[in-house]
Image 1: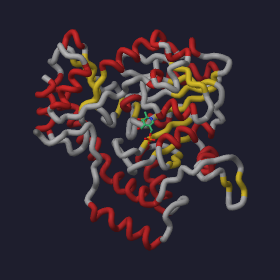
Image 2 (image 1 turned 45 degrees about the vertical axis):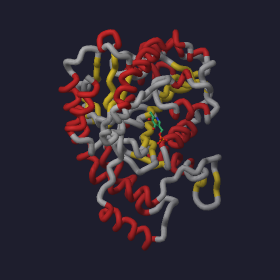
Image 3 (image 1 turned 180 degrees about the vertical axis):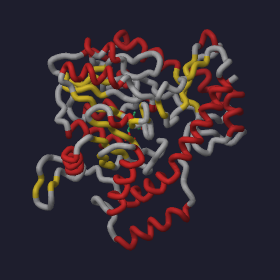
Length: 367
Ligand SMILES: Cc1ncc(COP(=O)(O)O)c(C=O)c1O
């Protein structure tokens, strides 16, 4: 049997390049709590991403939970069911009721034209997701938020390095949240970040991720422990040296897939968006069973039988998971596009060290 091809695989830089960072940590004897590498990482990330303020976290889920805390979000929040379950879990952990709204068919992001109908007197915020790193309709969403006095918190877990007309997508909304999980384009093994617009908000977020301490003896609010340690910060600094190359290679793989798949009936992929600099974090395809001749699940199993591991991402919808499936907004009739897309979507393998010949092999087996 062929060597397995996984849906993703982390790129680990040469070990000898990591050693000097470890030596620095051993000399500093400073392992966590806003250490020098943590501070350096925040500075370098802000510069790289083109954002003003960033606070790094031990993972993206805690960053989402903290973002909601930082803005005192309560009541109901409008969100998408077509995401990773952590998006909605972050609301649940804040005792906020998620209200699911359907997605738009082209890029599978929250559909702004359907948001207003879901707003109630309890609604305080919108939490959209830049799914696969493709930016949401940010101006339309902001317009609705402004009209109704709502906050906007973007789950930007997939959107590292993504820009709209040269401006980071992370600069939209009140707060944006990244994930640096090992499966992401840019990683600190586990990790995440909140991007905000003011120094005051950064201090607030920094305190929240450190038990709510302000200074040594004052606890202002019930914060949490969500700090990134020095070893992971070091890993992040090293990854940052490579990330442009990661994105370039992902772009090449994406273009190769597109060229090989474009004439296959019943297979649809997402094109680049006009004016957008992409990060190429995933390569999703949508399968039309009638035209392709096989269902998504049949294709998934077929690839698996050839040791090719694709991923049904996002499937099932968050709204169909047990904690959420009794909510009124979880009714599939309310989410017809998301329901259909979740049944037909499949993410094909994409990672820096995936070779062209493996892409040919995947497409060959898919055919
Ligand atoms: C859309 C989305 N939101 C949130 C998360 C959670 O991030 P983390 O795994 O860093 O906690 C993920 C990560 O996998 C994600 O894909």
